[in-house]
Image 1 (cartoon, rainbow, N blue to C red):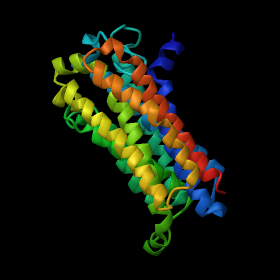
Image 2: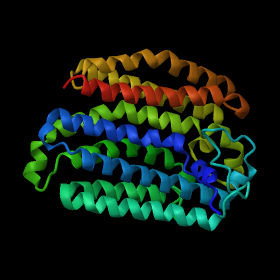
Image 3: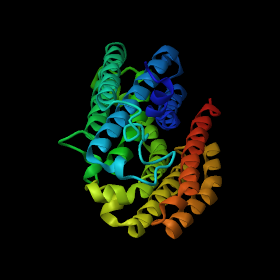
Amino acid sequence: MIDISAWLREFRYRFLLFVSLPVLLGAAIAYMYYPVDFSLGYFLLSVIAMLLLHSGTIIINDYFDFRSGTDILNQSRTPYSGGSGLLPENALKPWHVLLVGAGCFGLCIVIGLLIVLARGPAILVIGFAGVCLGVAYTTPPFKLCYRGLGEIARLAATPLIVFGAFFVQVPVFSLPELVSVYPALFTCLVASLPVAFLNAAALYIFEFPDYEADRQVGKNNLVVKLGTKNASYLYFLMQAAAYGSLILALLAGIIPWPAAIVLLLIPASAYAAAGLFKHNAEAKKLLPYLRATSNVYILASIIMVLAYILRF
């Protein structure tokens, strides 16, 4: 009998919003520049494809983290870190999890190809890159998150999602058409940077409670490579890059001024950074700072989306 509650936990539904927000941002920018081309149907399909890609990534990650032993050793699991915990609890069978993860990737590819046929080949390039990053994140022989490359992959993923959502709404079938939308693409890039750094910072701080288990099995992400103390400085730099890129974009007039409301979140980011510097090696005390970082990313992304909507 299928345990629905267990599978809901396996899909880590709290993180589905993480990947939906960049899709909203890319679609909002596309609508601002090219409102006539906007398609609600293809927007919904792009959201579903993104959710499937993200679900496949985290489910496959759960499977391989279980196989490596890090989720079994982890005694500091939080709602934000340590995987779902379902495989160590024997609540789900490993091969079922692997099969569902692969199925999510398969459905994502099918929907993506349908969108490509209708909305242009640019989506194929971006979608291919996204699927490659998702598969390579944990799957051997790539195992990016075991080699200190997972953080870079996550940072790159947000602009990719924004660009992908844009091209879903703005079909481009030739090089001249691509050149003609350059101003909007530049806006996508600049607008995605603050969101990308905040997203990367959130997913990065989630690694800290797993430090000991990850270190023991050789999951050499950047927190393990740097050690929790030095890794805390990189977290601070990610936050600084987020707000710095936002301020520069505001001053250059590339991002609408309502996005300046994001700067009101700086105290929350400072709170999380101070807590991380103080408790970086104390996994049980990190939960408030994980939650604060997650909330900052979500709120900042919503504000960015609304900044473009309010400009219409």
